Length: 207
Image (tube, rainbow, N blue to C red; front, side):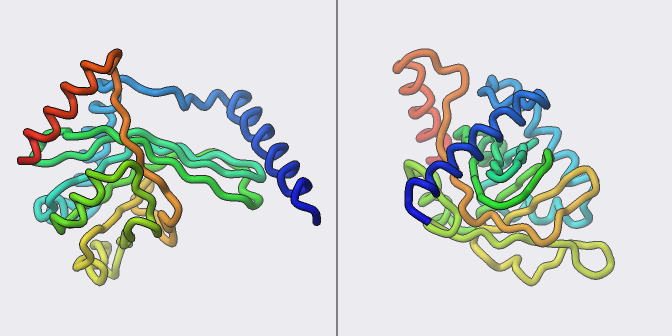
Protein backbone atom coordinates (compact mmCIF):
# COMPACT_ATOMS: atom_id res chain seq x y z
CA UNK A 1 0.00 0.00 0.00
CA UNK A 2 1.35 3.41 -0.96
CA UNK A 3 2.17 5.96 1.80
CA UNK A 4 -0.68 8.33 0.96
CA UNK A 5 -3.14 5.47 1.47
CA UNK A 6 -1.91 5.09 5.06
CA UNK A 7 -2.30 8.81 5.59
CA UNK A 8 -5.80 8.74 4.11
CA UNK A 9 -6.87 5.91 6.43
CA UNK A 10 -5.43 7.74 9.44
CA UNK A 11 -7.18 11.00 8.49
CA UNK A 12 -10.54 9.28 8.01
CA UNK A 13 -10.14 7.42 11.30
CA UNK A 14 -9.37 10.65 13.12
CA UNK A 15 -12.41 12.31 11.57
CA UNK A 16 -14.62 9.41 12.63
CA UNK A 17 -13.26 9.61 16.16
CA UNK A 18 -13.99 13.33 16.42
CA UNK A 19 -17.53 12.66 15.18
CA UNK A 20 -17.85 9.86 17.73
CA UNK A 21 -16.73 12.21 20.51
CA UNK A 22 -19.23 14.90 19.48
CA UNK A 23 -22.13 12.46 19.17
CA UNK A 24 -21.60 11.06 22.66
CA UNK A 25 -20.84 14.40 24.25
CA UNK A 26 -17.31 13.69 25.47
CA UNK A 27 -15.75 16.88 26.82
CA UNK A 28 -11.98 17.17 26.38
CA UNK A 29 -11.79 20.92 26.95
CA UNK A 30 -9.22 22.17 29.43
CA UNK A 31 -10.45 22.26 33.03
CA UNK A 32 -9.87 24.89 35.68
CA UNK A 33 -7.42 24.20 38.49
CA UNK A 34 -10.27 23.95 41.01
CA UNK A 35 -12.01 21.30 38.89
CA UNK A 36 -8.79 19.32 38.55
CA UNK A 37 -8.07 19.64 42.28
CA UNK A 38 -11.51 18.32 43.22
CA UNK A 39 -11.15 15.35 40.86
CA UNK A 40 -7.70 14.57 42.26
CA UNK A 41 -8.98 14.48 45.84
CA UNK A 42 -11.86 12.20 44.81
CA UNK A 43 -9.49 9.84 42.97
CA UNK A 44 -7.13 9.57 45.94
CA UNK A 45 -10.07 8.94 48.29
CA UNK A 46 -11.35 6.12 46.05
CA UNK A 47 -7.86 4.67 45.77
CA UNK A 48 -7.25 4.52 49.53
CA UNK A 49 -10.79 3.48 50.49
CA UNK A 50 -11.38 0.79 47.87
CA UNK A 51 -7.94 -0.77 47.34
CA UNK A 52 -6.35 -2.65 50.20
CA UNK A 53 -2.83 -1.46 51.01
CA UNK A 54 -3.03 1.67 48.84
CA UNK A 55 -2.23 4.10 51.66
CA UNK A 56 1.07 2.33 52.36
CA UNK A 57 2.20 2.94 48.78
CA UNK A 58 1.18 6.60 48.94
CA UNK A 59 3.00 7.16 52.23
CA UNK A 60 6.30 5.92 50.81
CA UNK A 61 6.21 7.96 47.60
CA UNK A 62 8.38 11.01 46.94
CA UNK A 63 5.73 12.39 44.58
CA UNK A 64 2.24 11.39 43.42
CA UNK A 65 1.02 12.06 39.89
CA UNK A 66 -2.77 11.83 39.70
CA UNK A 67 -4.69 11.89 36.40
CA UNK A 68 -8.35 11.43 37.38
CA UNK A 69 -11.18 10.53 35.02
CA UNK A 70 -8.89 9.77 32.10
CA UNK A 71 -11.18 9.33 29.10
CA UNK A 72 -10.74 6.63 26.49
CA UNK A 73 -12.69 6.67 23.23
CA UNK A 74 -12.20 5.11 19.86
CA UNK A 75 -13.38 3.61 16.61
CA UNK A 76 -10.38 2.68 14.48
CA UNK A 77 -8.20 5.32 16.13
CA UNK A 78 -8.30 5.33 19.92
CA UNK A 79 -7.30 8.15 22.24
CA UNK A 80 -6.88 8.48 25.98
CA UNK A 81 -6.85 11.92 27.54
CA UNK A 82 -6.84 13.39 31.01
CA UNK A 83 -5.65 16.28 33.18
CA UNK A 84 -4.19 16.13 36.66
CA UNK A 85 -1.25 17.20 38.78
CA UNK A 86 1.95 16.10 40.48
CA UNK A 87 1.54 16.28 44.26
CA UNK A 88 4.61 16.61 46.51
CA UNK A 89 4.15 16.94 50.29
CA UNK A 90 0.43 17.63 49.73
CA UNK A 91 1.23 20.53 47.37
CA UNK A 92 0.23 20.42 43.71
CA UNK A 93 3.54 21.54 42.24
CA UNK A 94 2.63 21.19 38.55
CA UNK A 95 -0.43 20.39 36.45
CA UNK A 96 -0.15 17.88 33.60
CA UNK A 97 -2.05 16.61 30.59
CA UNK A 98 -1.81 12.90 29.71
CA UNK A 99 -2.42 11.75 26.15
CA UNK A 100 -2.00 8.56 24.17
CA UNK A 101 -3.24 7.28 20.83
CA UNK A 102 -3.40 3.91 19.12
CA UNK A 103 -4.65 2.30 15.92
CA UNK A 104 -6.86 -0.78 15.83
CA UNK A 105 -10.51 -1.69 16.31
CA UNK A 106 -11.49 -0.39 19.76
CA UNK A 107 -15.09 0.79 19.68
CA UNK A 108 -16.29 2.27 22.95
CA UNK A 109 -15.97 4.90 25.63
CA UNK A 110 -14.51 4.52 29.09
CA UNK A 111 -13.05 6.40 32.02
CA UNK A 112 -10.37 5.47 34.53
CA UNK A 113 -8.13 7.01 37.17
CA UNK A 114 -4.35 6.90 36.91
CA UNK A 115 -1.97 7.28 39.84
CA UNK A 116 1.79 7.22 39.29
CA UNK A 117 4.11 7.12 42.31
CA UNK A 118 7.73 8.27 42.23
CA UNK A 119 9.99 6.56 44.76
CA UNK A 120 13.28 7.85 43.39
CA UNK A 121 14.33 11.52 43.48
CA UNK A 122 16.29 11.32 40.23
CA UNK A 123 13.39 9.70 38.37
CA UNK A 124 10.99 12.37 39.61
CA UNK A 125 13.40 15.20 38.76
CA UNK A 126 13.74 13.84 35.22
CA UNK A 127 9.95 13.90 34.95
CA UNK A 128 9.55 17.40 36.41
CA UNK A 129 12.23 19.08 34.32
CA UNK A 130 11.33 17.45 31.01
CA UNK A 131 9.43 19.41 28.37
CA UNK A 132 7.32 16.31 27.70
CA UNK A 133 7.77 12.89 29.34
CA UNK A 134 6.73 9.76 27.44
CA UNK A 135 6.40 6.29 28.93
CA UNK A 136 8.74 3.87 27.17
CA UNK A 137 10.95 6.67 25.83
CA UNK A 138 11.92 8.83 28.80
CA UNK A 139 11.26 6.24 31.48
CA UNK A 140 9.19 3.20 32.39
CA UNK A 141 6.23 2.78 34.73
CA UNK A 142 5.63 -0.57 36.45
CA UNK A 143 1.87 -1.18 36.64
CA UNK A 144 0.77 -2.91 39.85
CA UNK A 145 -2.13 -5.33 39.88
CA UNK A 146 -4.20 -7.07 42.52
CA UNK A 147 -2.46 -10.10 43.99
CA UNK A 148 -3.77 -13.15 45.75
CA UNK A 149 -6.02 -12.41 48.70
CA UNK A 150 -7.27 -9.11 47.30
CA UNK A 151 -4.21 -7.03 48.22
CA UNK A 152 -1.83 -5.21 45.91
CA UNK A 153 0.83 -7.30 44.20
CA UNK A 154 4.18 -6.14 45.58
CA UNK A 155 6.41 -7.84 42.98
CA UNK A 156 6.91 -4.54 41.11
CA UNK A 157 6.94 -2.34 44.20
CA UNK A 158 10.72 -1.84 44.15
CA UNK A 159 10.68 0.00 40.82
CA UNK A 160 11.48 3.75 40.92
CA UNK A 161 8.15 4.60 39.23
CA UNK A 162 5.00 2.58 39.93
CA UNK A 163 1.55 3.07 38.43
CA UNK A 164 -2.01 2.12 39.34
CA UNK A 165 -4.95 2.18 36.92
CA UNK A 166 -8.38 1.75 38.44
CA UNK A 167 -12.05 2.25 37.68
CA UNK A 168 -15.37 1.82 39.45
CA UNK A 169 -14.67 -1.91 39.87
CA UNK A 170 -11.17 -1.50 41.32
CA UNK A 171 -7.75 -2.04 39.76
CA UNK A 172 -7.76 -2.73 36.03
CA UNK A 173 -5.51 -5.64 35.05
CA UNK A 174 -3.45 -6.16 31.92
CA UNK A 175 -2.93 -2.52 30.97
CA UNK A 176 0.20 -0.71 29.82
CA UNK A 177 1.01 3.00 29.79
CA UNK A 178 3.48 2.54 26.94
CA UNK A 179 3.36 5.58 24.66
CA UNK A 180 1.43 7.78 27.10
CA UNK A 181 2.87 11.30 27.10
CA UNK A 182 2.67 13.79 29.96
CA UNK A 183 3.02 17.50 29.22
CA UNK A 184 2.83 20.49 31.55
CA UNK A 185 -0.24 22.71 31.57
CA UNK A 186 -1.11 25.90 33.44
CA UNK A 187 -4.85 26.02 34.19
CA UNK A 188 -6.23 29.50 34.81
CA UNK A 189 -2.97 31.15 33.65
CA UNK A 190 -4.01 34.06 31.43
CA UNK A 191 -0.70 35.81 30.95
CA UNK A 192 3.03 35.23 30.86
CA UNK A 193 3.31 36.75 34.35
CA UNK A 194 0.94 34.06 35.65
CA UNK A 195 3.19 31.39 34.13
CA UNK A 196 6.24 32.95 35.80
CA UNK A 197 4.48 32.97 39.18
CA UNK A 198 3.57 29.30 38.87
CA UNK A 199 7.13 28.37 37.88
CA UNK A 200 8.48 30.27 40.90
CA UNK A 201 6.00 28.49 43.17
CA UNK A 202 7.06 25.11 41.77
CA UNK A 203 10.74 25.80 42.36
CA UNK A 204 10.11 26.85 45.97
CA UNK A 205 7.88 23.84 46.65
CA UNK A 206 10.53 21.40 45.43
CA UNK A 207 13.44 22.92 47.37
